[in-house]
Length: 120
Image (cartoon, rainbow, N blue to C red; front, side, top):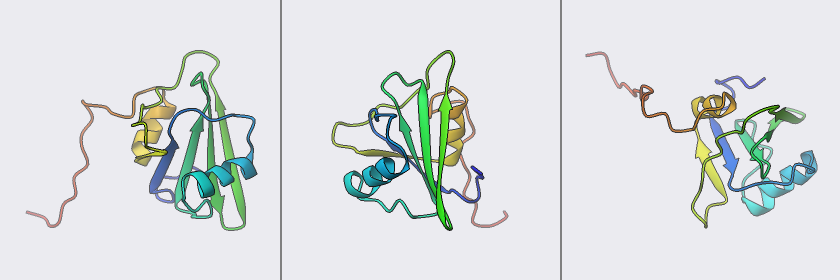
């Protein structure tokens, strides 16, 4: 469902989002506030509440939306800060996994990706 090979791009909504919004409300935010296409099947849109204890992930599949919801019983997600003029924060699928595991999206001790062009 949240397969790494199907979702190469992930956008976090900067700041907090009203978690009473459902699919239509979140898709409208993506389309009108972020100026992005909510129907792009290769993108996840992630929203967080003010307390950083709840997340919603919106994803288009070939004939409908998926809406994933995660609520923490204890603790908070480490929602990244953004510049005041940014509406979204682009992260990798790997960084999303870190976020869902309760870690920061920046892991200085993690191996950085290697983009090899040829075998040496």
